[in-house]
Image (tube, rainbow, N blue to C red):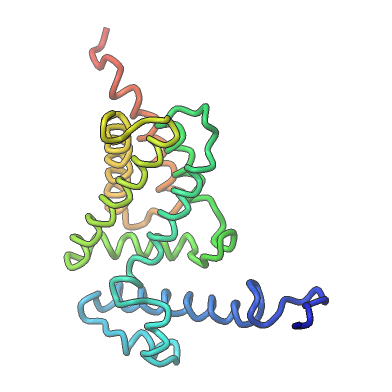
Length: 222
C-alpha cells in the first residue's frame, strides 16, 4: 500500500504540482516563441528547430506538446473554442439558442487562462488570430476547424433543445448565422492593427446584438 500525501503541498506529479507547473511553463514558452517567429519572419519560414532552440529544449520535447507547426499555430484559438463549448454546456436551459451562444462566446473570452489549465493570455490570442488570418498557408486549415466547431455547436444546441439535428434544420441554421457574425467581427477587428481584446469584445457584442433584429425585423424606415 502506498503512503498517502498528507501535507498541503501537491505531490510532484499531481495537478498543480511542480512538475505540472514546469510543463505548463514550457508549453507557454513554446507558444510565445512560435508566434514571435511566425509574426516576424513568417509561418512558412519558421522551423520547429528554431522554436525549440528559442526555448532551449529539444525537437523531441517540442513534439511532446505539439504534433507539428500547425498545431502550435492554432493552440491559442483551440483553447478559446474549447472554453466556448464548455460555457455553452453550462448555460441555463431556459436561454434561447442565440442568447446562449452569445453569452458563452463572451464568457469564453473573459475566462482567465488559469481557470482551466490553459495559459493562453489575451495578448497571445490576439497575436495568434491575426497571424492565422494573414497566413495563406493556414487559411484552409482555419476553415476546416471553423466548420468542425460549427458542427459541434449545432449538435450541442440540438441536444439542449431536445431536437434531432438531422430532421430539424433550426440548430444548424442558428449556428450558421451566429458563426457568420463571429467571423465577420473577427475580420473587421483584424483590419484595425491597433485594436486589442477590449475592442474585439465591443465589436462582437455590437454585431451579435443586431443578429436577431437583422433576421426578424423590418429594415425599412417608417
